[in-house]
Length: 288
Image (tube, rainbow, N blue to C red; front, top):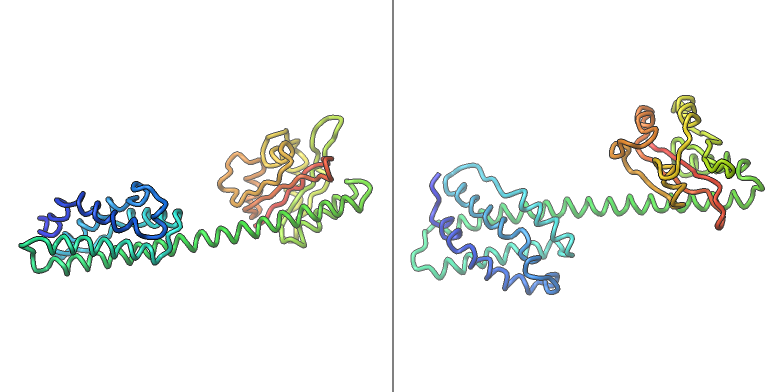
């Protein structure tokens, strides 16, 4: 399909359009602390996509906005604290920049402004849609992480309280699992206690809520002796720091992963069992 006059002009004046746009875009509040490269970001590729879109519209073909570039631009803008109004303003500046360039030309095709506005309407709408989708996704991720952090703190608090109440950690093990499992909404778990003479962890208690095959999980757990830095339990044992795994599908090397997935368990969490500087073992939890 031959290129229309407007698209040819934009391609010919591409660098000048971007230079003028950059001069205007620098005045946006989020851009004032950024370097030119960060302000330009995906805009050169977006402009190329706008040019191709103008050709499509001029030829009566299907409009295919540059969705990959728009999504990338939205992603970068969220990471640099632009809000949706700033993104819309950027495209408004691009529209004004190209329109001003057209005004400078003595011979301008009659349909230029109509094509320009149609193309930039598509692009602005798409960019705002991607910005909104990603922004909501990040908000959900932040809420999920906050909930996981609260659950981790609740588990650690319960562990400390039960250890303080019991004279022996093995006596507290069942209570720790009951609190962590039932009260905090987990579906299965195990307590691993440290054998100090052998410097190894041994499974002490296995718990599953009703509906999960606890026998299969208990057989698997009791057949293992995790080593330091090996798998989820070994990492927590070595670091004495809690670890969360949101999706077991992303952890192909994790011990007992296949069994957990077969039982419908999709996420995991492990926390050290410790009181002060003294370490007793590891609490392991699983959830659907």
